[in-house]
Length: 114
Length: 110
Image 1 (cartoon, rainbow over the protein chains, first blue to last red):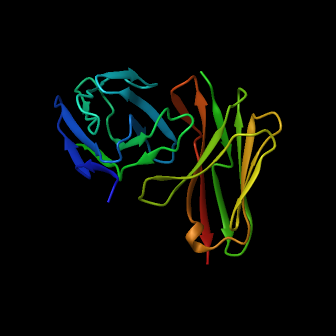
Image 2: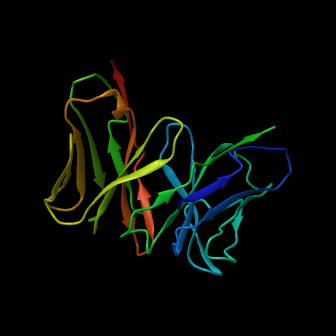
């Protein structure tokens, strides 16, 4: 069954700690995206990657980092520099460029501060 | 950067009533996509509109793309409790990014 798997579902971060959110897809999609969703808000783009070993900053990249070493994996690290990390994080993928193709989303990771 | 605005932010209806959400862009769009997010869930793609003035239907849902390709609407006829959720429109910015509207949260009184 193809899809996008995000883990963990819930994550708690201590002050000064970096945490990494996992995103894996078996859809053979080229493009992958990370979004942040705050309560009652839309989706804001953090980072995106159109191809392996290449990624671009989105609108709110500060305090976050990513890697794209494999086509199927696009982990997001929330660094200690991100002062307000509490949010719902969504990973998505699309066959080609997201502007012309539907984006498929994972179930998300809810990150909170301890 | 480009902005995509949605109104209303919230809408509460009685089951069986109609519902409409509107999406407006600050720039002309090559296409627009619509997504639905159920409470506690993730966004799910509904449809993409490409042509000026295009109208597409999915059962009780009617999607329209404006003639100037700067606005769009989603209309639900005779809402059901399964329609509860937040509806987002999204338009392209540049060649690689989608910009999402803030969404319209629909709640329904059964």
